[in-house]
Amino acid sequence: MRALRWIAIILAGAGGAAFAAWSALALWFDGPASRPLAGLSAAACIAAALWPLVSLRPLTRALPLALLPCALVLAWWLRLPPSNGRAWLPDVARTPTATQEGAIVTLDGVRNFDYRSQTDYAEHWETRRYDLDALRGLDLFVSFWGPTLYAHTIMSFDFADGPPLAVSIETRKERGESYSAVRGFFRQYELVYVMADERDVIRLRARFRGERVMLYRLATPPERARALLEQYLREASSLARSPEWYNALTQNCTTGIWRNVRAIAPQVRLDWRLIANGALDELLYERGLVDTRLPLPELRVLSDVTEAARRCADRADFSACIREGPPLPPGR
Image 1: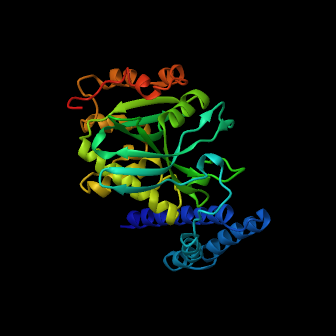
Image 2: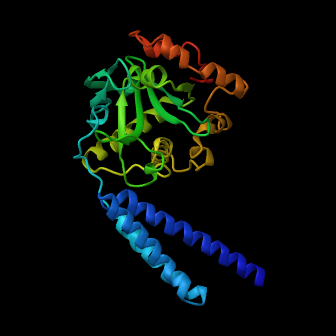
Image 3: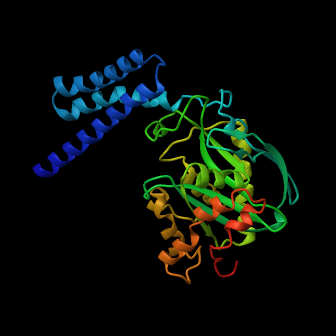
């Protein structure tokens, strides 16, 4: 029993230390704009958490008092309001909105930029019409920028009568702001649904950012793909009215996909590969959502469209060109 008590004390202490560290970082990143004042606030938070642990006994009495300042920081942090009214970078300057009449969707704010480099581009925002009755399937892009444990994911809705619609859930960055993996865990970036032509978002990542891009053709029935697209359109239009925060753990490109899928299929279970999404293709393979007639390593080779995206970058039929390699699953 004594050993269990010490284990509980150690675990409680480690959890309290992690909570205090998070509180200090929250004050540093999301607190006062003045760096000296933010640093002073973070230091005061740590001191307020340490004082009961040093001066009070027993630990069961000291720990709740030590966590009280952290709880106050959390209560403040949760009330920080997101905004749609900042000085945004041009590539996220607009939030898409949709109107639907029967099977016809009119989508305003479709991005179709013409890139000359990552930072040099001609801006083209378009209003496009989509016939949901012509939706024939769903594809998933997985783009690796470095470590293979994590990636960026983009859903793409494939239409029989026009180009696919790619949807990328991203951080909405302000002018002069760049993405930071650490800042992504705090309230530094709003959430945005970038709805774009594939020649925009996929060419940008493969050709100009030097990322490795995989394309997986999914065994999603048209009616399920339609329900998911309608859910995406509702979410995007909602964000245009009521902004939300991005979070690198809970509200990112892949957990956003899962949330939208869960909205139309509540039985879909959470899986660790939705967090470590570099292994997402394993999950798709296990659930039969990709071509399982091939071994997974072979499917990965055929699904790598990096070179095709670079080779086809200037072609008007970009989307058709990059789909010449990846196999369709049975029934698609």
